[in-house]
Length: 607
Image (cartoon, rainbow, N blue to C red; front, side):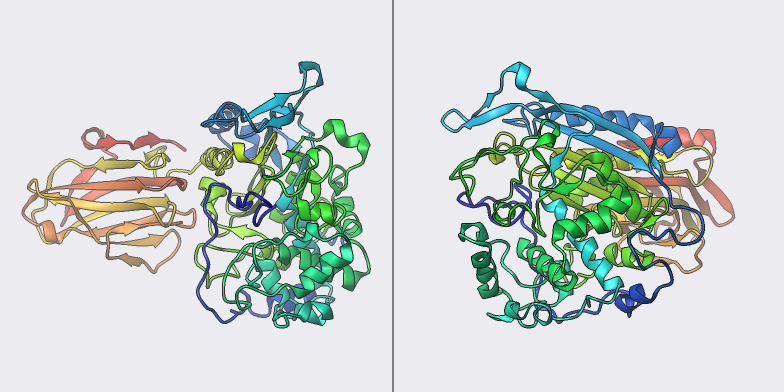
């Protein structure tokens, strides 16, 4: 779910987390990887949804220990304990009544844990701002296989179905939507393209109340008559209307309804048996309840919604919509994630070709910094991906409290499914449980020290500043130099790792340096004495000229700052060595030198 909430005006996209920024005017940029849209249709390999191709089967999921997954157990344990904190007031009300947490790496699911209640409240009492609980014997505990209304996570499935059709040549990424749906081209939409729908750059308004129309035909008429609020291609604005429009294109070109496409092209080939639109009544005891839907906070008076779609527009479309309406469980979403991380295959089933997945994991919105988007997938969004966020990390959230994050750089995946609108949507804000879970899974992926068994680690505390200070050293010649290895991952806008020096008790000043990634010859000058963002998950060799501090007692320090509400994976420094001509004046591999390092917030870490 997304867009404007009917009646209440509450954003469904980032409730309490800030709306996506709009980009400036921009001519449509070419898709990354020239001719990629053509390439994915021409690449060798099985064209159908269940072809096995040649070679070994792709990985499938199995349960296993953190060690088997290549993960550290401690952060996974903290992932669960932190998630349980949000069952309590946070700060005024629980963020969710319950959740199912799943985390893994490679083919191993190392964590699959239900917490709290799938069904707890029968209603919401607006007068007292309290939930009316079911009797204890009618409440239902969360289970590993509890099914959730995925809300906007459904958009990923619609996007995959679209990319499949691009592979098969029946849909063109740069084609005008109106060429498939002539009625769509009214009211200034004649130039909207399929790519703009997939990347939320169409110019559509975030949301309109289609459900208020009495029939499907009138809903479609309202969409045909809807004018973009910005010229297509000129802004990034997340909109449900993009995926609703894409659904209509898919149904037109295939002659099949979206729920049929979902079953035949994705869920059946992958064995996702608990994923579908409009679950049958027999599933209801195993489905997490959503909201007591009443005006003014909901657009419709429906009472407790449980077992049927929560989103008003999806409800208006009979529960089958391109933007919302799919129900699924954590394991099935992990299967989908494993499929994409494996280049579109799961076991002997293939639903996409590797080049197609590459497009879904590559930023098509480079003209709109901060709004990274592949085909259907959001990229590099710390506000819910936390420290798992990299330029290649893909995912999506749903208004009901759901989320999926996939990090191809570490081959890790995270599913957080919570019923956070139970009993009412205004009990929660922001995305703190998702961020906390992602931070812990990111920390669970070890970083191997560049030298020896340990390295200095900055930690991952949001809003913190940590310093690592060398003892005072006298640089006698003009050939003083610092050498070390560094590894960093910060939130780009607010986090940084800075090398500073202070001579003879003076103020700290940045020290310019050069970094060279492992295995590369060309280095990158860092004239500001700092690095920020993502280092590519590789160690970099650092060289800093200390000639400016010749003849003075000088202290060097690393300062790691995480100034915002979100963090990256942190920073590591290893192999600190200061040379003065042919003389080594400091080497942290020497026990005596290492003991003189002053650490405030940094720690020695073996992982």
